[in-house]
Image 1 (cartoon, rainbow, N blue to C red):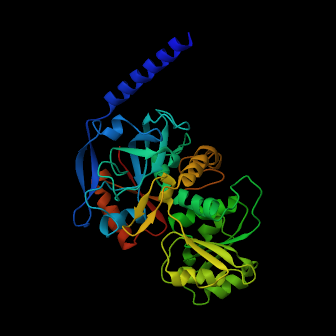
Image 2: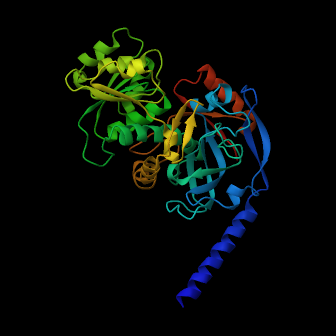
Length: 388
């Protein structure tokens, strides 16, 4: 009897897979990095016949893309030497789940989901800026009922970078656990990563010190920043350390890593306890060695994908399965609680999205958004595109 039941279940799974495959298009439009790294172009590539689509990895899902978000990494892979010509561009996307690997338990076919991949780097048949995309399930989350695809597409890379910095690297308590009761300095509060790091740090019970342009200070305080400082102020370090509690900061996240920002953060760490700073880009040895009692480490969100990789043709990382497992735990267990009660255009009681700049033209016009980002003319907005 048990054997017959298993055979019936197996047959039903095969029928389901066949129906899913028959619904997938033979070809899709996708955004490809040009040979000279001068931008991207829309191309048509095979899809349903791909080996990796037909035999989906146990830890992967496929979504039909509805909206995509733009990150600094995207334009740098399309317009700088970071990228690989011929690969498919784009990291962040949200859409409808159409196929699920056997090991993925927190998502099912028909769910609305968002996630990221390592677009523009090595895959010539897969990227977020396409009509369909394969994602590793560890970095995909189910959308709350009232979250729009555009709102969701603004989350994956910046949110999971903040998660990695705070909880995987600094070892801070996640929200709803015993509050940290410590202080953290976030350099670049107006960036996408800064936006997410501020809110998570506050939910984890930290006192949050932030640098940003003065015009952003009130908005950042509304997100959870306790103290804001002008990053251009020549006396910014002394003002941070002389603020209430500022002389005893032991945690830091540098979201910009430019113009000596990490050096200034090192100088702002506690003179009695030292500290630990996480950066979102590689830093020179001179900065790492600036103070013996301050640890400075570069973190890369792509390690949450769980496979060996090379970033920007320069920095190599081993397969970090622990990062993959911890990311999966977060998106499946913690993120639903953080996003609970989400209302479109308003956010959730515990968390808010960035201000969105909804770009027009779909896939064919993403190059315009990449140029806007390359020029730095997007302020505190998150650029998103509706794809379907």
